[in-house]
Length: 126
Image 1: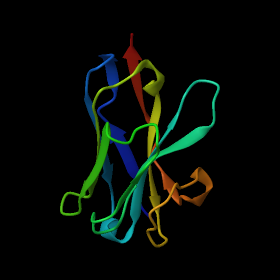
Image 2 (image 1 turned 90 degrees about the horizontal axis):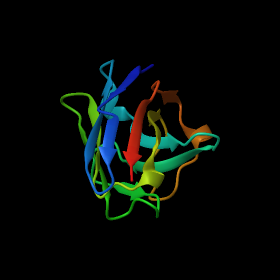
Image 3 (image 1 turned 90 degrees about the vertical axis):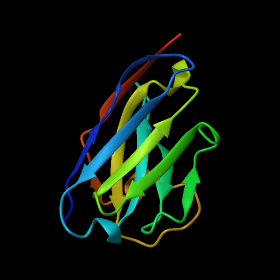
Image 4 (image 1 turned 180 degrees about the vertical axis):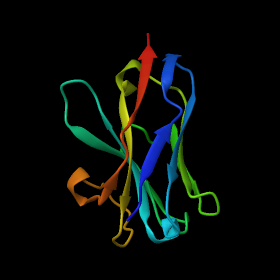
């Protein structure tokens, strides 16, 4: 089992940047595919990005390609989401998630993930 805790959310102006972090407990962090999802008010939780166990493979939602970068540091049990050129429509609660399955280069769905953090709020003002 793994426990996840996000940090780094906040208020930023459109065009700005934020870096989210997700710290994981346990010694098996490197055995999980890690992902970021987001949920805007009144909307479903949707896929943002995912990274393979080694960090060599990544996948992104079309809406964030070229602006967001997911990375991980297995020595620190941490996954990151660097968000640049932020837009008001990026406003949401951002959740970190872990999947015990094999990585594949595709969109992931929230019901595929095994563990979740509590989320961190990102607000982008226009």
